[in-house]
Amino acid sequence: MKTRDVAIFTGERFLVPQCIQRIDHLSTHGWQLRYGGTKLFSDHSQDGSGARRALALATKELLKRIATMPAPSRLRRTPSRKKQSDLPSGISGPIVRQRAGSRVRDCSFAVTLPRFGDTPLARSVYIGTENTYTIERYQEALERAIALREKAEAAYQRAATKERRAQAQVLKVQMSGLLGKA
Image (cartoon, rainbow, N blue to C red; front, side, top):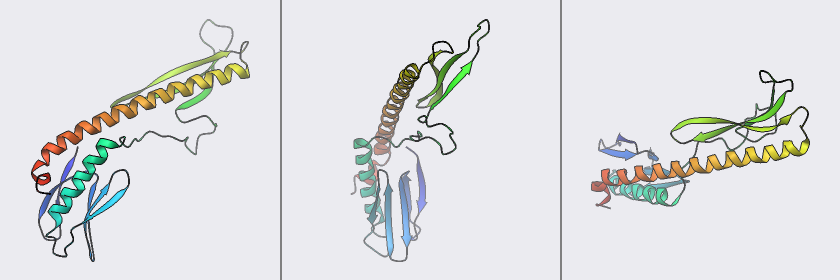
């Protein structure tokens, strides 16, 4: 997990993991956790003397949330407003094409399958030819395309959560000096 060096208003410097922000505003001084909702861990002092303990508590809460919650995902769950069809996100079509050497056109859906840490795959779900195309075949192909996309999204989410939890273990070791003092 990424960390950064943060200097607070007193000049004291801290190694802070991503998802934790420093809040210093008028009478509010503390660390705000932004992972699965927000929570402020106050310094309980105006002079910044409680900043180390507050950061340790925020980091412990971050590690707890990572261990119990799925990783945040950047996958698009709803179709773009610019999308002109009512198909789910990651599915487009029907695409009509005529293959070389064929006298009839065929129809299919294009499905984008996300893969965590890798480029997405593009898959085609066959509907039928212009001679065999029916509403029933369209619905069956759409159901197969949705199932294919949902399976890929679930695998992506599992891989993202597994990676985030592995990063949390590294963070725990990296921050062990701070966490032992809270």
